[in-house]
Image (cartoon, rainbow, N blue to C red):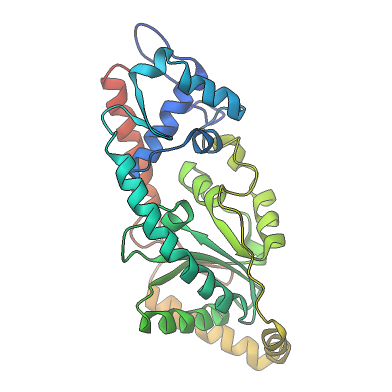
Length: 308
C-alpha cells in the first residue's frame, strides 16, 4: 500500500495514474474516513507521501485525466466519487466549530496559566473544524519534566469547571518536555501532529515538530503551521511561576509520585495507544488510531477493487 518512503504504491491494470494522482486519491480516501472533503490547499498540505507544490496539486485536480474518474468537485471541495453529499456536512460542522473555538481558546488560556504547563494545543476533530454539536474539545498538553501528574491533576480541575458550563474538555495526551519525540510513527500520528493547533507555547510546538521530522515521510508538504493561524494565548503566568518554585521541594516530589501511583492503579496496564509513566499520560482507550488506519486500508482496498 505504501512504498518504503511512505508514499502510495498503486497496482492496477489498464491506464496507470501518476504518483501525484495516486497520492491525491489516497489523501482524499484518508479524509473520507472522517467524512471530510478537502480544498486543494488542504489536499496539498496533507498529500500522502508525495512532495509537491500547491500549484501541482491544483493542476492535477483541475485538468481531469485519470483523476476525473475517481474524484468530484463540489464548490471549493474535492471528494471521492459518490461522496458529493459530504460537502454539506462539512459546512454544517464548520459552523459548529466556529461556535466552539472561542471556548477552546478560553479554556486553553486557563490551562496555560497553571503551573508546569509548557504548551497547549487543540487536537482531533476541532483542529480541522470537523465537529458535531456536543463534541469534546481535545487538547495535547506539554508539561515541565517531573511534574506531569501534578499538572494533569490541575488541568482536570479546569475540565470539571468547564463541565459545569456544559463544555466538554478532553485533555487526553500529556507529555513532559523530555518526551517530545513520539514513538508511534505512522500516518495517523503524523496527521495528529501536523494538524494540531498550538494556542500556547509556540517555542515548544516548534521543538516538538523538529523532534518528529519523521512525519515528512508521510506528509512531506505539512511542514508549517496548520491552515488555521495559531492565536497564541497569553495568560498571566506570575502565580503559576511562583507555585512552581514553591513546589520544587522533596514534598513536591512526593506529591508527584503519589499522584502518578494513584492514577496508574486506576488506569491499569499500558497497551496500544495507552502509555502511562513519568513523562507520558496517553489515554486513547478506544484504539482510535488503530481503527483509523484499519479503515484507511479498507477504503483503499475498496478503491482497488473498483478499478483503482
